[in-house]
Every structure is written in C-alpha cells, then in structure tokens.
Length: 135
Length: 354
Image (cartoon, rainbow over all chains, first blue to last red; front, side, top):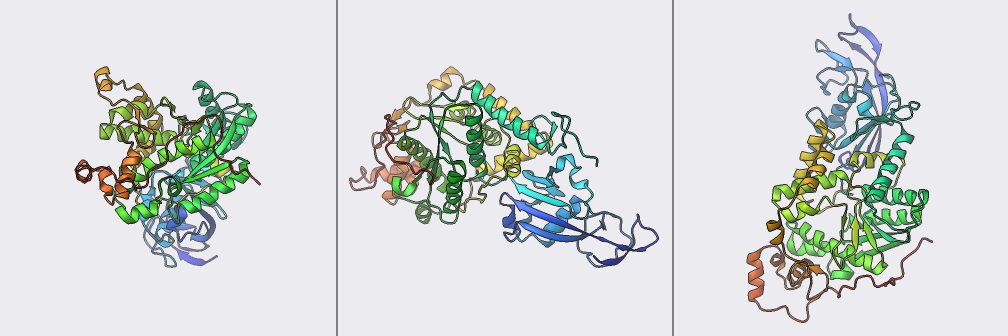
C-alpha cells in the first residue's frame, strides 16, 4: 500500500487516497520467455493511472493529465515497460496484445470481461497465453 | 461487468467466447462441445474402424497433447475400440526437441499409451544440429520437413499401425490454404484441406482437429491443466508460414469466422482436368522404396547432397546439375533403409508404461 497525493478528474479536489492494487499475473504458452522465463508474477499498480497509459510517472504526483482506474490496457503497458526483457513486438501491437495471445481475467476469457477496458480489482489474476508457438 | 450466463446450460457462469460461433459458454459445456465436435468430425469422415491401430504424431506441443487426451477420452466414452500409440520424431535439436520429448514421455505415463521415438540420427545418420552446422539456418526447414514426413511413416510402419493422426488444427489448415495460393501450388491447394490423405501404399493420415480452432485447443489445455511444451524451434522458423500466420491472426481478430471461411474456400476450389493431368504420377523411390514423384524421393535426394557435401543440390536446380556432373552417387554413402509398408506384425517392441 502506498499513500500518494493524486490529482485526478475523479477525485477533485486532490485528496489523500489509499491507492494501490495487488495483482497476480501469469504467462504461458512460451510468452514467459519474454519475461525472464518466469511464469508467475505478483505486482502492485496504482489504482488510478494516466489515461494515456504512461507508465513513467510511478511514485510521482499525477498533475493535470487525465486519469482512469487501472485497467487491463494499463496493465499491458506496465508489463511491457517494466517486466518485459526482449522483443516487445511479440507481446503488444497497437495498444493491445498481439493477435494470437489469449488473455484470461480470473479464469474467464477477457472477451467476456470487456478486454482492455476491464477495471482491475485488488487480488485479480490475469493470465496471458501465447498460441503462436509450435504444436 | 456482471457475470455472463452460459448460452447452452443457462446456468453456470460463462468463461469462454467461442470464436467459431460467438457463443458464451461455461467450462463444462465447453469441454462437452469441444469433445463432441471432434467426435462428430471423426464420425462424419468415418476416420476409424473398430480394432484400428492408431499412432498419434506427438511433439509434446499443445495440439498433439490435447489430441492424445481427447482421443483417449473419446475412445473410452464412445467405445471406438482403438489401440492408441504415441509416435514421436526426434529431429536431434539440442535444447528444443530433447526437452519436448521429455513432455511426451510424461504424456506416455499420464495417458498410459505406448510410445515409440524414432530419430533422424538412426534413420538418416544425421541430426538437425549436424545438418544446420553444415548448411546453416537457411533452408534447414526444407530438410526437417521432408525428413519428418518420411520418418513419421516409417515410425508408423515399425509400430504396424493402420493410421497416423496429427494435431493439425483449423488455423494450421487455413494458413496452408493461404500459403498454397500465394505460392501457386495448385496440387497442394487441392489436397491440403482433405481430412484424410492416403496414397496407394502409404499409411493413412488424418487430422481430427481440422475444424478445431487453436484458441479452443489452447483454452482446453489451460482449463484441463494439460502438460505441454511451448518453445519455438531454435532454428529459424519457417518464415513464409510466419507471414501467413500473422496475416491470418489479424483477420481472425477482425472476424473470427475467417479461419473456417478460408478452409471452406480451400475445399471449394476445383482443379481443372488438364491441370491435374500435368501433375506427376506417384511412383516408388528406386533407392529406398518410399513414395516419390521422381526416381529418387526427396529425402534420398537431400541425404545424398548432405553425404556428398553438396547439400544445396536438393534445393536448387543449378546445384543439382553440378552434383550430377560429378557422376553417380558413390556406393559408400549413407542411404535410407528400404521402406517396408506395414506387414501385419509390429517390427519393433514398443515401450509400454511402467
């Protein structure tokens, strides 16, 4: 948990909020090879994030810019910018996962959960599985 | 977002959106419809007869692992009366195939199926590691593909099976349709959508997952927690197929039915009689007895090039002429043992589960 001053369009005027969520993230089907060959990760995200998915503001005051609740789209950017070790083009393309990567949110196909717009909750589990590796 | 209810049982929470139909279904209904559709494919194409000995071409990857599991399940549920075997080809790729074969060996235990592993080294005297060290990474997929096809048939003959099933799925077949169109390969375009292929004296081959989407195969493996291996081959993957695949995945993202639609298009092509008449008749290889459209089969041609240190002779006409100019193949080169189609008795004792 971290305490942070946040200026957002949802919490105006700026308030002191408890502002992080903890997630479990898993990679499979060979995708883990892009993430140091580690399948399971636990990570913490701020609960309110920049609407443009910028991930370089961690720990700083968000001022002025538009914000949104942390969603799966933001999670993908966070993973790409902070955890991914190589070949980002094999993970993301045009602000979403590369076609052929399956995503499950709490063991449900993300296509039933609003895909990138799904607003993450504390303790959610998100699984990314590549279907692109040889069979 | 409120949980969605299964469109089939109207009871449990939906966990999957089916790419083929757009239906939202729960886990149990998914298992049931996936398995039942494969069963219907098998029935409609009359793939099996009671008592058949069937080898599953097993790489340890997702498709063949799910195929082995589903065939075992259906064989028990519907009493097909099949004897199922796992047949794996060891291409000799350190760090790739040796790891995936460990997965197949676990599958052998998990599914209680006899396993036969046949290696390029024992059949051809060359591992892919050694081939790549001689020819480099360019064109090595040609060697691997030609050698694997023949190795599967020979492994099947050793097991004395009637039939080889492979894990080719709907996505693979749609990709192949696209590739054959882009290459103008009319002969292959005509046969690549067939669920069964069988030459006169070759072993029957079929693709029970012809209509199964890759997404559903991977989801099935995930929800069943099946043990499979997923690493890209360390030698550059088939680049042309890679482009077809990326294109197909982009199409699928825009319209999921694209995959099944392309298969239907492939099935609907008709080859004109005069085109078909120009295609070469099948014969048997004069050196190894395997089916061939020339005097020498492709594997013997490639092997001779490797043995004589002129590997490109199996790839380009120019290099072939150079090889021919050096005279006939010497007697002392390695050749492939003569092919014996199944005779009624297994030629090898297969390893069974402990």
